Length: 241
Image (cartoon, rainbow, N blue to C red; front, top):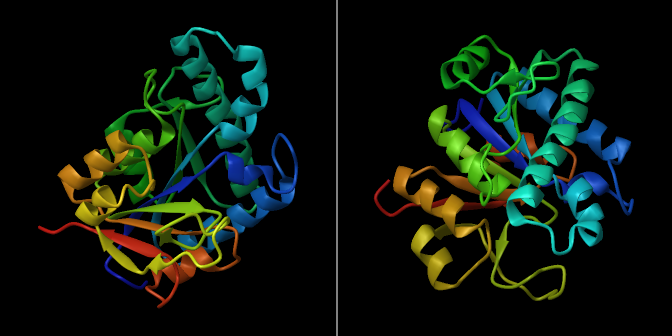
């Protein structure tokens, strides 16, 4: 293993699972992500995962216009469970022992989230997927990822995106966008860079949890980030850590 990480939390956006499709889950992307996670697990890392639900829930956004915010947020949590179940299936088909834990009780498909049990699963070498966000409305899956990472004492949050790190502007729109290989949390706030929502970011800052943003869609990138390969992704560091 590289770096000083042993226990990691990987955050994957739901939109990333779209691939080239307009809706739903792209099977090729799902398989690719499962391969990446399997490789990291095989290297000896304790891997936990949070998956967003944007590929499913934003697809029905038109039908939810004017809907009660709380109701809509619970629908979003269910969308994360669909993605989490799909990822669990993809991993288990590759022989990776996986546990899905839900913040909303649904015993037929997932274990209820219990912190000590999640840690025990990780210690036993199982990949743990955290579904249904925090179980509360008004909180994003980024906040759920930060919260779970802190609860299980993860060494780092790895945020898998479609771009290779943190830039001063959107690299998908500006080809001259400048990448920050390393950036402090204060700089992120000063420059108003949208890495994750403020609640999630504040949780990480208060607990000095490092964040690495990288391109999850490039094969092998997860292992490269974990092994500290130069030029892959961007790291957020905290001044007092």
